[in-house]
Length: 253
Length: 253
Image (cartoon, rainbow over all chains, first blue to last red; front, side, top):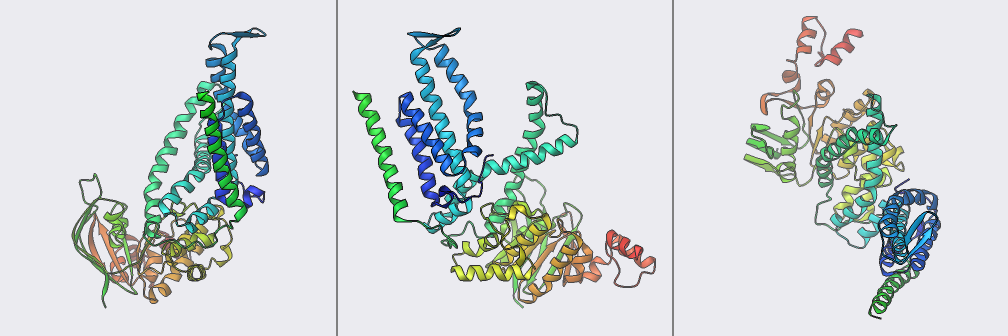
């Protein structure tokens, strides 16, 4: 399940900026950490983040599905084809440094994807819009960010409708990989063309409702923020800066 | 009475098109009027709405020649497909309808009062807490019309507004229009639903190839349809049915 899932978890109740700051810290932290143990500790942190939002089950499966092909690629590129020294695991001869590198890169991808999907599942686009509106952010930027959070579920919903319609007209989606790839054509073309055709009307509709105006929008129900949440966001920023400082200090050493 | 919209010899061509979608159109629209524009598909009715409300060429692009004066400060437009007109950012019908007034930066209580008033006018107050994406096409279309009304438009353009509605909901929508017009809004409707439109219209125009070929009182202008001629020939008492579905209903009775 990709997209917002209504709930009452601490992440759902938190100010949207706090949840996004946590996801952002995971993303930036993933690139600051360079050792497998550090990166996989971060993956565990991402799992705790997902669990605290009640989104572990909803996020873990798509995160694994998205990460697995990258893990496989990294394992081949770095583990099998990496430089010496090597270690033997069963029938495989693996590069020691390559396996470490694959673990770091694969862990980064997993932590980032898990963090992003958790934010997607726990940040209500409506609350985010209200928070940004209350903060005086221009609607164009608000719409851009909120649309990013909603585009995946909307496209997924539309794809399911198109797939059902095409199946009614005889499209077979099961079978071999080649057959599945062949079924992508009748799905992708109407999906993209339909989305493009509707963009014009949506732009007109938003414009008609004053979205492009210069007046500062009224926030009707801005989410509550607190000193402790603001402090947490500030602390996350400091932690990320410290992590990068540590990374560069180690690189120089 | 001062015209809210005045078109004099207006020709409009869409971007990339060679043939104009509207050609040499002259028309005035005043407060309290309900104008119905009809014609075959591609006759230019929808374009007339876009031009009369100022969205063409400002939003859709293209070239406009001739003299156009729009005295109205607030113009609303509603299209046939309601799902393309949602913001996608609101978690309830009330918020969706309040989006327009909130964009104008009105105080929160005024915004909510405008939303409540619009919901009452369209008889959808019971949907206020529902999620827009969970509504039927007919419910959604009424939400979209209410969203346009919440902006208190001086000119309201409705492009085939009953296309997604069941007959009862379509009647409810059309029945609400005279009161809206009486409050000072100029309404222009592009529709093939002549039977319902003629009940509420004060004036009608027929377009053909982007040109106005007939204009006047609805009974005079629309009474020349094939369905009306058949009904008259068959000795049907007035009001004469104007389109085939209405003629069939009359025959069945």
